[in-house]
Amino acid sequence: MRKDSLVKKEVQAIRIPFFAGTSEKRDAILFFAGQFNADDYISIAIIGPNIILRHDCGEGAIEDMYRGPFALNEWHSVTVWRKFCDRTQMKVDTRPLMVDLTEQFREFKG
Image 1 (cartoon, rainbow, N blue to C red):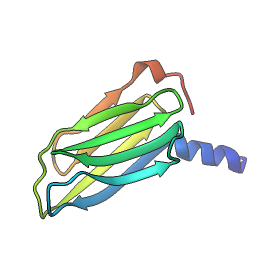
Image 2: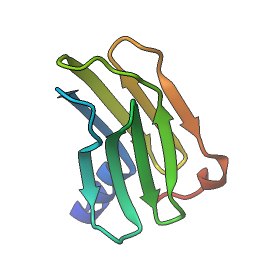
Image 3: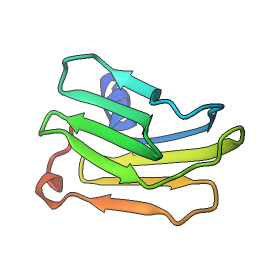
Image 4: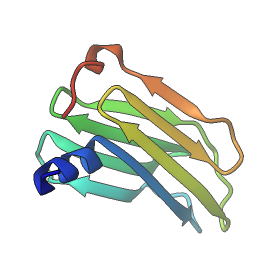
């Protein structure tokens, strides 16, 4: 298998687990991968009481909201999954899994 095909596979399906905590009510970027002003990125942020997942695979930006509020001065477990461009999932702590299926991107493979 060629090296460039391995890299492409890694980009098409990704899992991002991390812990985040805040000590005050402020908006913040928790994770960003990609290039600013580009068509391929993934961003996870706290905006108000919610966690916002934004991503674009070159076919248009998608924004998902995981509703808060989240307790201050506590660490929260956040896991985000993206498979190709048509499926994203996010889970925070022991709350229910959020799944977003974007049908118009089903055939897009990166």
